[in-house]
Length: 173
Image 1 (cartoon, rainbow, N blue to C red):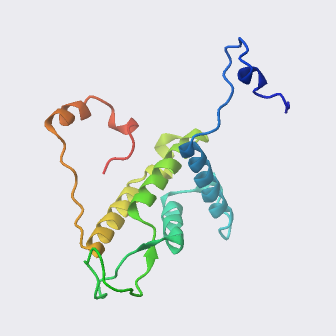
Image 2 (image 1 turned 120 degrees about the horizontal axis):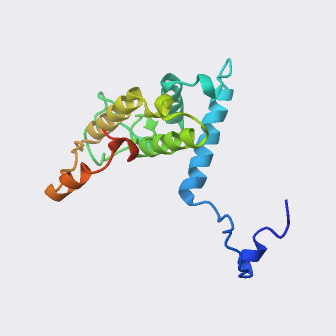
Image 3 (image 1 turned 135 degrees about the vertical axis):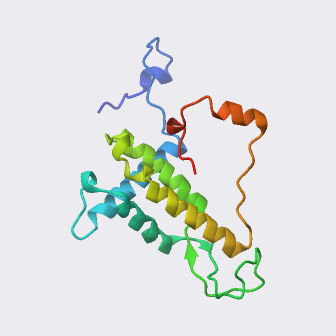
């Protein structure tokens, strides 16, 4: 590796070759998430090769991450269940927030394919993952007393939304 890497770009050389920029926050997070998931698979007993990974491993990984969550999710027996702003602390568990899990799956889904995986075998794109995320979203919304309501599309968005291939535009619930 050369110490002068990127020097030509900084000095304004006439080269048409762009110098690799610092990865975006999204790209950095995606790489960290991918490495974390890979480490999780290696730590399984026995270790799971990425080629053998399926949606059950992904679901186990999401459940494993709950222990590091920061979102209080009231259980049904809790006196604060369904209250948006409870007046006192309780012993209900901390979990990963639905939005965090949804974003994580989106990044891992992209990373899987960028690292050579085929879209048709992408375990992060499985229907079981979508069902799990929907259940987490609904459970967390009920626990907070805030029903999740899908945003209504404006009439002009409905026609525009049908003009593209939905499979390439991310996850749809």
